[in-house]
Image (cartoon, rainbow, N blue to C red; front, side, top):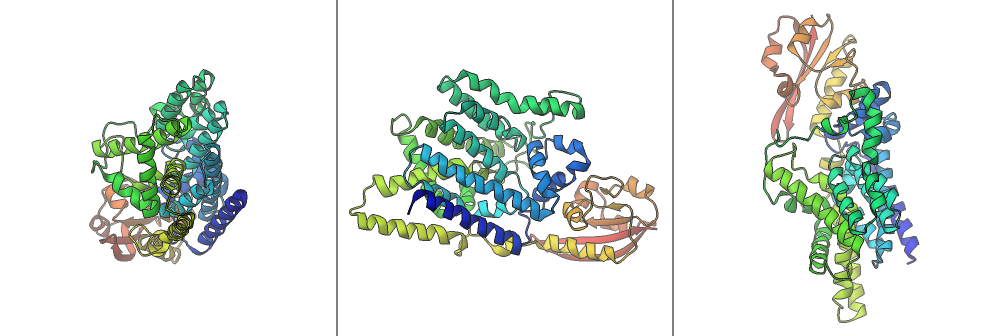
Length: 464
């Protein structure tokens, strides 16, 4: 098959699969950050300060905002576009590295189960992966200043961009391209100046980083956490090839067989990112949660390293005959394609991964009950998903506020209050018993159900 034809066939196939996923699966990737990132992007045109919120990721908000105006479907389209461009750049980078079967790198990324799930979300990892791919692509084509500029904006997509920036500093020093180095600060300079009018400081890009703390409210965990979790990110076939690729590159690190860009930007890029997240979680620093999805940020590096492993197994080992080599190649490709849907722990589970959760279904149920009563100018609630289903401006304090006992006392008659024991109770400290016995409140509705092996309770109240 023509190489370019194979690439475009894969891209079209992924675009079709992604589009069908958007049309027929109503999931949101997760019930927390995915929703909140979407809400920031949706409300940013009405609250310009949201374009400079470090948690929300300024560049993500800027680029996602036009798509978010079309609802959560729009944000899924945005991430699908990000993923398609990333797949294209993975191929072009593999070609520039002179790796055989470059199209296989695209297929390896496509068949990583969690990558597809996060494509249909409002999370930041797909955009981060795109900027990682842009940095790699422009470096391989010797457009170093362009590469440095794209990398300089990575911290404004995800804070781990600072790790990748460090890798590029090492790379530019190693090739003695001094002119590119200052451009690694270009994104910080742009956002420092632009955000000055919101934060009153040019250095807000550093001082406002929410993860800049040598502690974590989420605690710490197993040193091998990401070694285990990587399997659930990419699946068994890619995990195997990635492991082989890492071993072979490590063994031949100083050999001429390993391209310098592969050695630094791909191998060390992935290694620095992986080790950093491992240590953050193990040491309980930088508010790390040990989430496996963060690894998708370096999907371009993982796909190319896995391709390196693939080429080693099917070319360097020299199977006894070309016929058997082709047989094994076809069988492996078939397994790779089927793995995301075959029964296994890492496979895509449609109900769990691509559909609304029980928690979200209950939020919709409560919102429908809310509509049965007289409209309220102000609603108190904490659960992010309610802003989506109620189509409210999450950041407009005139229509929505988080639960607070003092604010409830000061609220006008008719104000609605939605309490649940996942976010509202934990953050506000208000218990259901307190609200049930509050003399100024009337309970309108209550429901409960099991969520993550824990009972979740919702209650709707009205201020008398």
